[in-house]
Image 1 (cartoon, rainbow, N blue to C red):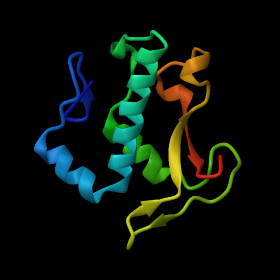
Image 2 (cartoon, one colour):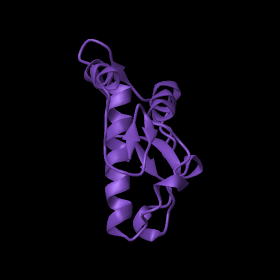
Image 3 (cartoon, helix red, strand yellow):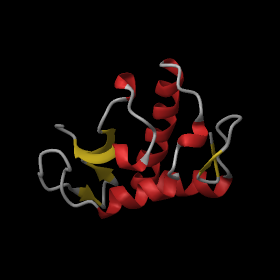
Image 4 (spheres, helix red, strand yellow):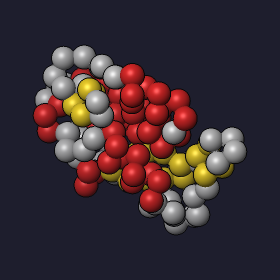
Length: 114
C-alpha cells in the first residue's frame, strides 16, 4: 500500500509528515484518496499485485496541480486557494472493472462533471 507516498505490500501506513501535508494540501489528499480507492477496487476485481503501480502519491499530486484543463472535455480546471477546494479528480482511462491497469498511462485528470 502506501508508505511515505510509496507503495508497500502490507497495509496503508501514512507517516506523520505525509499526514500533516495532506490536511493542508488538496492535491496530496486527492491523490492519496485516489490511490486508496484504486487499490481497493483492484482487489475487488481480483487484481492484487500492487507492484505494477508505477506512480507515487506525490507524482499524482503534481499531475493534479499542473493540469490546467480537463483531459476528457477540455474545460478549464479551478482551484480555490482560500477554500482549499479543487474541481477536478483523477480517473482511469480504462476502468479497472474493464481490465484497466494501475499505471500512469491509464490515468487522467478530469473535471467534476466528467
